Image 1 (cartoon, rainbow, N blue to C red):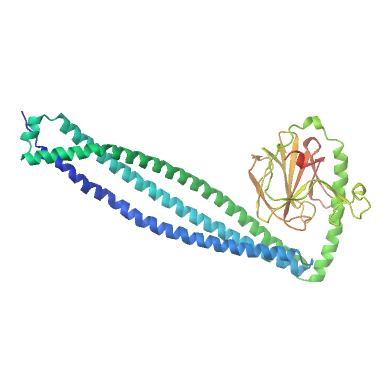
Image 2 (cartoon, rainbow, N blue to C red):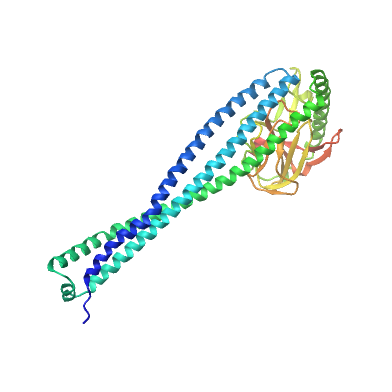
Length: 422
């Protein structure tokens, strides 16, 4: 009979050496994690500082809105708006950098946990193998394989210790696997966040470029002279009123053509395109703000007009989302008249939605969109006294796009109260 030398059981002690070697990358990784966390914290400080700057620029924008309508004040408002947008771009860039660092940290964590998991699996395997060999050995083999009675007792005690620690090792491996899955989930979440930030940065950059172009066009048109600006403004306001009255007259005729049987769904058919509060509802406006003349809304109180949708408060550059699945049916720019830059979307419930006064349009005619998709970014283009979204709901069977007297494509249709469908 071949007698095994059970001193070999003590070679399991060498696992400690192996573990230390495997643990070395973890120590290195810990240093890397510390450096990454420091960088992430620095980015967070930068983010907080940029958010303060944006708040200051926003106060400047609001302050200039309240001032008289002069070229100087208009340029000052545009400048403040541009500075705010530039700060927002830097903020998003910083968030992208911070998110990338977080992804790198999670990737490193996952790698570290994988190394530790493999180390513990190897350790567990060798422990189980040693215990199996010990259990299969007969008493005579163990006695003859030991140098002394004391040696035999040491081996027995060591194996007992290994056996008692077996459940602990199994629990540790299970916990490692759970942590690993959590880190993978976090990593995927951060990657999705990164993609969202990249899209946001692209949109913000487009809005910033649009604002700079608008300011440049104004300076070029007025030659930076207040007299020219006021003269242009007076003429433009008269033209804007003409366009608004023409739209109102056309829509009053189209209201009579609405086919209610072609419309399905009611309250909750649409989601809100933005989170901003409603600043102007659908229906009559009795104030100097009224843009079209409608005697039925006058009530002997002065100016009266009809508002064919909802106005919702937003800041220039805020994303605007489609209210329901649909197909983009119109994308156009009316310059400084009526809706400015606008988008219309045809939906499957017999309704068409209009999103107006945008700074940037991010979709094209014929494109399919899902509820909640970003279709553009808010602004104050067209006949607008400040950044907001104009949202109109038309009966699709009445909707059409026609050029106005100045040749700009104009959305026309029988309007319905959006609150009936939101």
